[in-house]
Amino acid sequence: MGSGDATSPVRAVVFDYGGVLTTSSRAALQSWMERESIRPETFSAALKEWLSRNAPPGTPIHRLETGELSPEDFNRTLAQRLRTVDGSPVAPEGLLQRMFAQLHSEPAMLDLVRVLRENGVRTALLSNSWGNDYPWDLLDGLFDPAVISAEVQLRKPDPRIYRLVLDQLDLPAAQTVFVDDGAPNVEAAERLGMRAVLHTSAAETRARFAELVPGVVQQGKEF
Image (cartoon, rainbow, N blue to C red; front, side, top):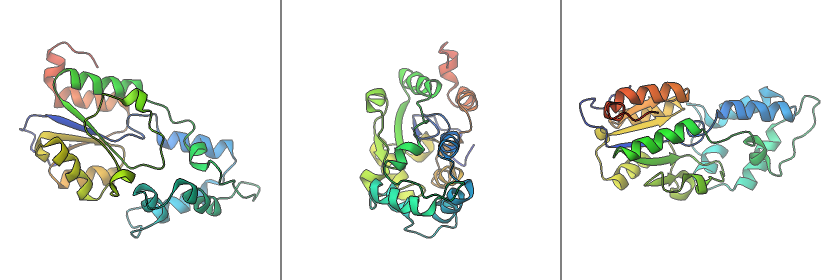
């Protein structure tokens, strides 16, 4: 749990999308590399350079997430960094879609969102977009607000994007919980005074919410 005031009531929960409301991003990427015989070290090197804690501002991933770099341009940039096991280049066309082809919605987490809303806890979405096609037909009505990094030109863990969500919720940080599968994003939320849950599995996060919002369980609502 984070540094937020544990005595304040939980009035809203802010969820990440990929890897939280979906199946594992790591597993989806591993499946993609296996299908296309990508040399894992070529992808890992790009991630380390572009997304690690020590990555300089303005990397291709940063610019993709803030909408400054189109998915098509990112595909070309990343494809240049990748190689298959036989040394062949990787086709850039549709690369992001292929990378996340095995990323699917996680019913247990969507059920958690619904249970929270049914019990008067507001829910918001805060997602760093990688050119994602969000399944709004499935997500419609579950989040108010929904803040997508490319639409607001800000990305986690920039504190400004968390403040934007808090302003739209019109709630203090201490009355909100943030759920993300990225430790730097969770730590940024904690520094702002939000309570935070580092998501590792649906079962563990749902169990954590049984502690955070005990009234849901006391009312007989099942996760």
